[in-house]
Image 1 (cartoon, helix red, strand yellow):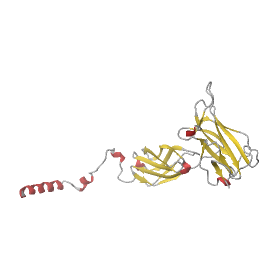
Image 2 (tube, rainbow, N blue to C red):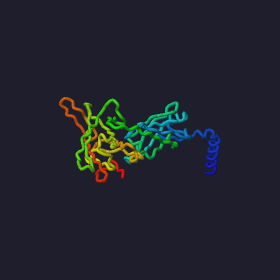
Image 3 (cartoon, helix red, strand yellow):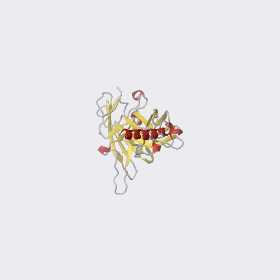
Image 4 (cartoon, one colour):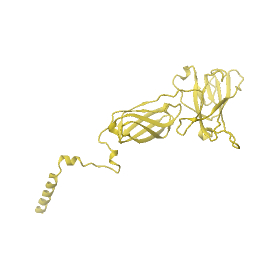
Amino acid sequence: MKRALGACALILAVALSFMTPASAAKLVMTGGQHPSAFSSARCDDAVAATTPATTTTTNVMQLSGIAVACAGLPIAVQLYDSATTATLTGAATVPAAGGSVQLALSGPYTPAATAVISVTIASWPIPTTWSYTAAAVAPGCVVLNGGGNTNNGKSCSLTFGGNTDTSGTSWKLKITVSTTEKNPVTWQATVNFADLARFPFLARYVGESSGGATFAPLPSGFCSSSTRLVTFTGVASSGTATVVGADGAQVAVTQTIEFVGNNTGQITNPVYICP
């Protein structure tokens, strides 16, 4: 037995003599992924995240300032949208020269309401600065594409009805959204409630009584502004999100939203409140 134990000790000693520090350092444990997806150290100290200028939603994000040392590594983004309480994800590969990369996220988000964003490159967390410049808002109607961005190749329009409240202390009017497009399009409207050519007076309280619209977050300083620009879309679950033009036997589909304004606060479904 002693002779057998002695032989085992000799074999172990010989094996250890061949494991130099250099060869031991090459013993790398990997999982089932491609080795290029791993990095032994963080390749960048900071990146910048931006989003296209939009008044509502988008599913696109741009990352820039990525170091060339990160070239070929996987980059992943997680974003929390406080407007919808949704967490979205996106992934891409850093270009060969580093620099910038555009990611398509798993769904639309509201840049104005984005609260948290995290970026990793090769699973390493990267400090990220987030910036968003709101698009210049103008009254009118635009058509949106699937990503929530303006589709400049298509159009829609707004028709303002007259005031049907003759009390003098309140107004009530309807705005109709229409299009000449032959296929259904998703609309987005922006209305200036301070436009006295459209509304009898500047109401401190405005509500939407039809229940057929959803409204974008109001900017800071809204009530002190010389304009009262409000952007809204239809509600998909209510069937008010799209319009279509007439085409032969096809009947046009329009959407009509009714608004009420006063200075007493007696409104339902508030659009804005400026006491």
